[in-house]
Image 1 (cartoon, rainbow, N blue to C red):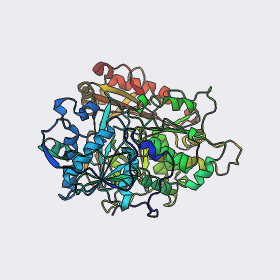
Image 2 (spheres, helix red, strand yellow):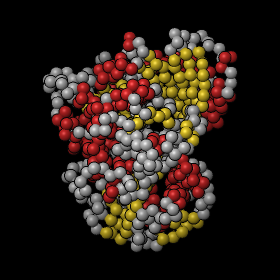
Image 3 (cartoon, helix red, strand yellow):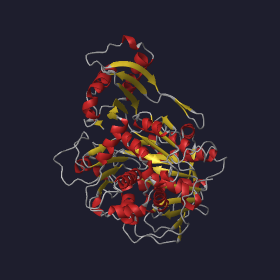
Length: 637
């Protein structure tokens, strides 16, 4: 049975604010409420042929938007082919029975509205009875997961999410589609592999011909009959998600804390889907001033920005938080907020910063774990019952989990691997690891309240931590800030210096050639013959990460190449190389650098400075510049 948030069942009352209308496409007039509007027309089966390359990556299928639009004849009916293949796979997983209820929503990027119309027609043509679309067609990814799990008691059997996550949007940029299954979790590899196989044998798709388009700006509750058996209903994007957050956190205490004159926040929505959700929660629920928000209006091209919440692309927020571009403190900064955060395009990733203090995603995860008593979702259960991180993330979480005797797991990159652990009892009848905490180095943090990472959840977790740290701080006195909390944590557990180098849009053949060199020369080679070089940083081990799921027993291989090093003073370090599965063109080489430091005297140094020699050593060993032609990374975070 699906989880339902513990809230009273009631008809949603939409507040008379601008939040819900922030989703309404400007091209539509105001719709009519609770009126079944017939756009019904004939169902047709359209002959088609397979289109190569519909292989989903770690989080759905991403391509240039022109591919999805079918600009070239070779990509004609691209959306229809993919959705028909997806639906055929979901039906096969449902015992051959057609799905009855599916959510369709996107992050608002360019082509979002047109794709929703096409998808609704394909679903209706196949006989899906209830198609739920949020007002305006825009919904954050964690909110879709919440609605799948909780709306009408968990009635939805899946959700089709139109997003390329943190990738840019607009003409010439990226578009993507991913599928979340009946517990709100991203489709696993078995599903996506079957979808790909189906896409290579498809011969036709079903759709609805003629009729009017669905008015996505219509009031919540409005319905549109696409066929005599299939109806699109406009739903509230916020309800289930906000209710879930209220179960995780003490909103009453937060409202009180928000009124303290010493406390201020700044949230950057990066013109993505998370912006209206931040306004709904931070302003309308918790009472923070609207001046606490920046770039919270969704735009098809994200306002021309790259909606990836890191030190490079969230530069304006980083500066306002009193930080330099490398994450170190800027001593000249004035009037800096207490807490800052940013979302990505679909609202699932997060950047966390305090005044003059950048918190790496790996550190943030570890510190949330160590401060679990501040978060009601964990405190009610006596702490998390399980925690997990992606393999490229630093080991900061591991040392906390070990100290607190919490079961912890290291998984491949991709939130779907956390889904099995969160659903161990719910889906598989095995050990219960909930409440669960998990995260990825790529600015993803979340819990079991949904089955996705959740950027706004991470920010509220930090608000809770600050509230707990200041429960005895009298009003009018300086607050214990993020920097003090971070420093105390490092003093207790040591600091895992951490940094990521991204080399974007690298020639795929060159990137794979580099990975093969690492496998042949180091993973399978003789490391004793590798000279230490002038840096004195010795390569001591090499392996390729693979994973056996402790819940369903499935195995996943080739999930990253790990080089283990030892500095001259004996300090351990590691470098991970991985090709990202989230791009739409070429390959992105990600190089993750980590060095543990117990000496408190060095904890305040900048990570890029500490890790520079390690980066140079690793880049030289793998011949990155020689093979790819890249002398410097695109982004350092």
